[in-house]
Image 1 (cartoon, rainbow, N blue to C red):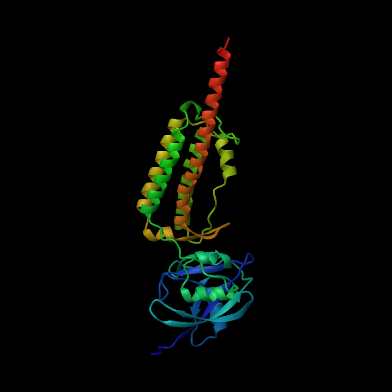
Image 2: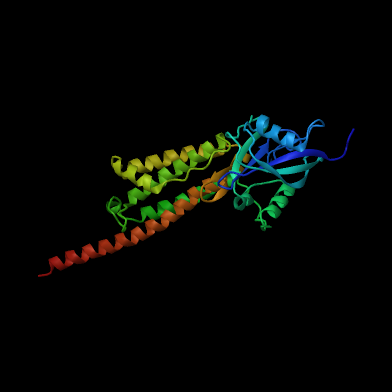
Length: 313
């Protein structure tokens, strides 16, 4: 039995947008760990042969140009040691696809974004050296459903308190320079929560999916075409959306909140981070509602003054 390090070939696949493929192993000695794609080198093949086999048979792409980059030393969960020949790969043909039994999650990330990815330490250190010795980032957040539910409940309480401070007869009146009414803000909060929950669900169910940010301009266009909802209907819809969010989070597997997705602006993000945005979004618009309450108070004072002036002989 050979107890020495095993030889492997590792692919640093670099797309035109400078992003590289990272995968999470579903089974074997690296189960649950994120790495660059790699495969063991058989006794009858060279490191280059193994690399091409990795690309063709495991990732289902046709190899393009590749070049030896460096040697990486990796240690598996089982204690097995690997010496990996790392190759830079470019201009391959096809889209990388693989069975879930091999890799259960994957994403494309730029060097500057990989800090958000829970890579095995040896590989992270090596990549930091490769990409100009960047400093490491703080540890990733560990999200739980209980904490997220508490955050979004507290933020919603703050939001509704700010909304309720606005006189009822002014809640359907524009109270800021953008022409928003308090009821518009209520509808916006409902729709953003539903979107973030559903997009989070899609990213969890479709490993490797890129996060699609909420588009405020599109929302305004759609909202302007909707039949006007009264406050009662909006509150009912808000409670229904929150009930669905609450139920979904309560039954979500704990590790799902720490799953990764690519964000077009923020790079690698965790699903829990996106769900926490529901709370921060409510707080942001609570501030907007408080400003509307001030505008409403000023309007009421002005109207009273004008009425008094009219009553003067």
